Length: 116
Length: 115
Image (cartoon, rainbow over the protein chains, first blue to last red):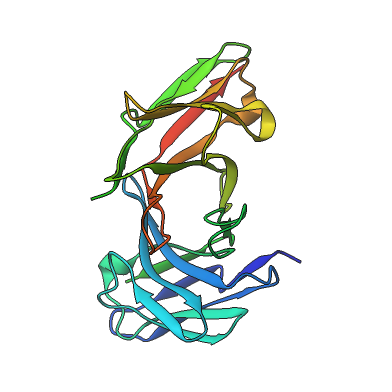
């Protein structure tokens, strides 16, 4: 099994629908992240969580919400999807500071979302 | 503000030739620097990082990168490219003094190695 598992891998939905992307990890990492990838724009951080009780907005959090249900689970929700949220979404995990694993991100395989 | 620039959207090189993928960065303090690679239909994979010490960092699959503080660069290099190195490469930076601990990624450089 993969260290970081994202579901669904692909989803097509309509404008206005609520969508949840789920992420679970077996790395035992405290830190979890949601990124969005768009062609030519690289990766942009949506939300990140340093532990179950700590949730932080990233650079593009508008239109998104998250829930850290447990150390191993971090879900991303689009309450009312719109077409410009069509993108490839990645969940990632890392060890906390300090330590050799800090900022070495382990990524899931991605969830491709299409909003019509 | 922290940022990363990858000036080339695309790099093409023949198999067996050396390759360089460029990265420059901007941070207010001292940087942590990273390279990640993304193969088609896969998530990003960690290649190497510079934290402190020797400016030449060696990573996975024969890749290396050199930290140059005066030029604020962290170019990725490999002496002899393989077709299997064809992928999307991302440079990332973090301000060492930042308590937020988050990375800023460049836009990516598509490397194509032809036989």
